Length: 235
Image 1: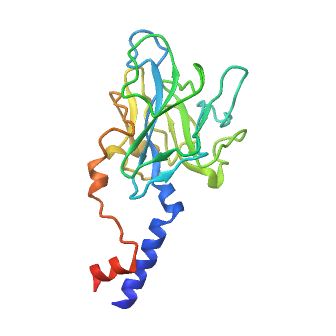
Image 2: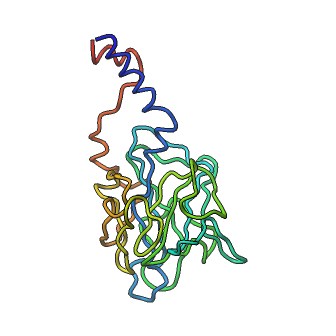
Image 3: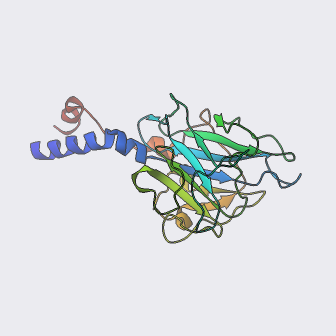
């Protein structure tokens, strides 16, 4: 029994480490249909993140980046009046079992994005997501100038949708539209490392840090992280 408790303690330490906590953060919803006239659902693109872990995660210096569907497209591009990334400021966090909403480019037509984004890109034109085919990546540091597939350890999560090349897994997520977004299944809990399996399309329903926490995530028992807790549970 003592060996089993020691093993459990070791596993709990790993589960509580920053690296494991970071892996719990993922892209849970993407909408790129703004700017397509008065029939679009919202007048602002957005990327929603979800933390499936039991610990708050510090997002300081992390980046959400976009690239087009082309196989040669690079992450973190910028022009004279636009950029395709957002870097979280110091002190940004995402709570356990909770969401975070990043507002991207905005346009005339449609209705205002609701709920209000927790963060937004600096200016109109920045992070203009395709409404049908593109790639969104989440990185633990700003990543620029290299193509999809060469990211290495800085990549936390990515989703390619529509006809975009270089998905996570065997195939891309289905294409959204001006009236649909792509959603990670089970409120953000599904993560098989295959975009085509994890994502489906549905009516846009953005969630921010004040939204109700995912109930399925809350049902997951927290792993005890102290020797006293372990003894109390397993002795």
